Structures are given as C-alpha cells and as structure tokens.
Image 1 (cartoon, rainbow over the protein chains, first blue to last red):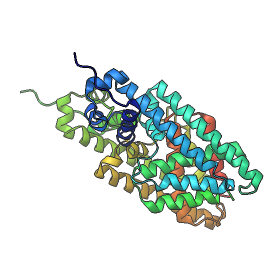
Image 2 (cartoon, rainbow over the protein chains, first blue to last red; image 1 turned 180 degrees about the vertical axis):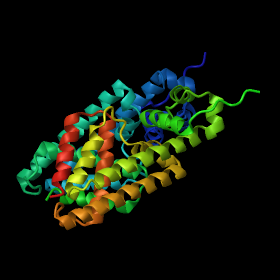
Image 3 (cartoon, rainbow over the protein chains, first blue to last red; image 1 turned 180 degrees about the horizontal axis):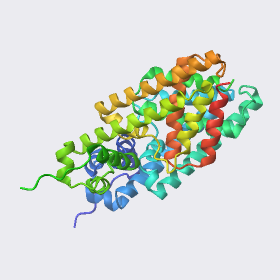
Length: 189
Length: 189
C-alpha cells in the first residue's frame, strides 16, 4: 500500500491563503485550491477536512501574518502619528491589492454565518485595540491631537481602513486612495 | 400551446435585488432567485437571459433607487453639513443592514471582472461628485470648514461610506458605527 504523499501543511495553508484572499470563499474552487497547493483532493481533505476547514486554517495564517506586520509598523520607534501613517501607506502600497481578507469575508460571509461573524468581530477588536494604544501613545508624545476621544478615533480608523481596502480591492483609482489617506492623516492634527 | 406566464419584470428585478444584495453574487442560487421572484427557471431565463444579466438588471435597479435616496438627503434644504449627516445616519439606521450592494460587488467581483470594475468605478464617481457638490455648498453656507480641499474630502467621505457599510454588513456592533459617524462629522468642523 502506498504511503500518503508527504507535504508541508503550513506551506499548503499559505498557498491556500492566496486563493481565498484573491478570489473570496465561494469563487475559490477545489481545482483552484488543488492547483495552488499542488495537492490532490484526497490529500487536501485528509489534511484539512473540507473546504471550510481549509479556509479557516488559511484565514488563521493570514491573520497571524497581518497582525505581525501591523504591530511592526505601529511599534517602529517613531512618533505615533508617523507609525500610523507608515502602516496605512504600506497597506495601500501593496500591488496587486486583494484588499483585506478580514474585510472581504466580512462582506461575503459574515451576514449569513455566525462563526465568521465572530471571527470578524474578534479581528476588528484586535485592530481597534492596536489603534487605540497607538493613539494614546500619540496623544502622550504630542504627535496626535487630543481633541478626539481615543476610542472613538480608533473605531473611526478601523472603519477608514476597511473603506480603503474596499477601494484598493476594487481598483478604483490610485488618486482616490492617496487623497483619502492624506485627509485621514490631517484628521490626526 | 400555453402562452408564457405573464409577470411584472420590474417587480421580479426588485425581488432579485434583495437576493443578490443580501447574499452576494456567487452565493445567490437559482433556487433563491426562483423563490424570491416566484418565477420558473425558463421564465427567468427568457426574460433576463442568464444569472449575470439578471444580476446586472438588479444592480441597475438598486443603483437607481439608492441614488434617488442619496440625492433626496443631500438636497433636503438644510445646511450642507446637516444634509450629509442625515444621509450617513439614514444609511446606518437600516435594519437589517446588507451594507451597500456597490461595495459588496466591489469586494466580491471587481478584482476579477472588468465589467463590474467599470460599474464600481462609475458608481463611485457619481457618489464622489454628489459629495463634492454638497461639500462646496457647505463651504459656501458656512456649515463645513474650508480647511479641507473639497475633492480630497469628497474622496475621503466615499472611503468612509464604504468602510461604514462593511462594518454594518458584518454586524460588528452598533457602538462602532455611532462612534465612527460622530468622528467623521467632527472632521467637517
């Protein structure tokens, strides 16, 4: 009896991220996932269970990597306003832009799917807390105006980030993104 | 030979809007569309061609209605800042919220579909122009600060609207929406 083909599960997950991130959940076919991972249907299903489980593993991998990047930007040793600007500019500079996978699944799946809605809620809260910490740091180091309540401003920045990701994903013009980020940054003065 | 069943095409389109708006394109099944419109597969396809054509008709109907509502709010006879706030509050007050169909298709379809990308681009430009007109009116009537360039601010408001719609659609908490709208409005001072 042939042994099951061995493969690197983390690497397969990473490749599945690209399929789900770029295409969304429904439009990602089994063929897409097999082509991207180089795995057979049976290997995929043996390792991950089903399409949904593979998606959840991929989303977890995406989230860990994005949070790592976000924290790197927000704790880059600069005044908080520059850290925030660096983060937003870096997110917008990605090419090709698939937007934000959390935002994408929030739109595609959250309205009908309680588990995904909880995931979205949890990720949103993590980003909100990271922004909140950076805003408080900026209000202490003098780089961010104290005229806004920090939590309200953090929530607003999360909404702006989601809006920017939609604009980036729908390829609705670079000038729009640049103008929007410039206006957003002026809000911090 | 029986005559094809007669039906109101505009009404069928309006009901298809609810399916595509709430579920998205891929997740909207033929059964969903038949159930919502009360039409058989053959009637649907005879009238609209295929799922994509029905979707495009539904999106056109959605867009016309939303633009009508937007223009009503933005031209409600109040100072421009209050018109804008009325519009944003009304959008956020919808329950259940399916977000914005333009934003939804921007996330789900635009990255892979040039026709949908052009639609998204066109609708975005229409909203941008409507906001631009209102901002200029507000800078003239004194209700909106002149410290922002009107076009940049209009583009930013479009991004905020998309972000708010994502948050609303993903049901990520009423407090987030209220805080974000309050911060957005403070930006106009």
